[in-house]
Length: 272
Image (cartoon, rainbow, N blue to C red; front, side, top):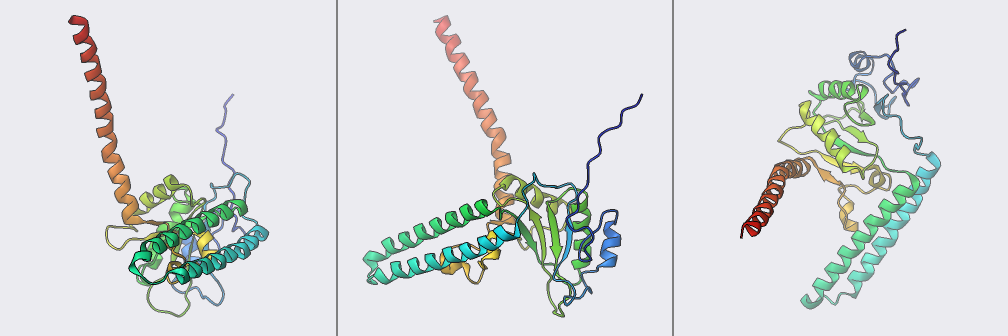
């Protein structure tokens, strides 16, 4: 009698959609069917690939809750913006009061950030993405690598690329993770992108939560609320990870040295 290993049931949210990768389709076949360089933006808003192994724990984003998040999130922004105006209006413009005003504005920005996060958790708007901007001469190669990594469970929950909108320059590729609070998973996906050769030591890429995108917090508007449009920079995150990895053996050695000193001290007292 032979026993067979259990097989993983694959699930593709984009199955049956013309704008998405299909189960059984190789990365090469998909990119050939929907080449990002020439697929029309008049037909497709985005070109998608989903990780068939990344089925969630039953909690998927509800369109109703997402709409609720957008309404309540924009209300939070409007209220915070008014509060910032009120704080600035109370500032007499003297140097003496500027430190207090700056602190009040910083405190309000922190409160807004926490309120947005709390609302995102409440409405299950938790996804976020690393954003890449390859040139037209490289978008097909990079997108094919990302598609292959997503369908083979090496990246996050999904990825998308902008189609041809008739514009020259760069194309946006978003590589998603399912929870912007999960810094370990965000770092894992980044390190995989580095190992694939699509992220290097040159121009950094940035990670942004969908909770910000949905309510219009962009690089051009974030400063109005005292916010940063992106949560993470690839350079900073990789540097912090490298530093933590270097420090870990040192902490371990310090602990061992401490044990050794304590042991020697005990032995010395016993011999005295």
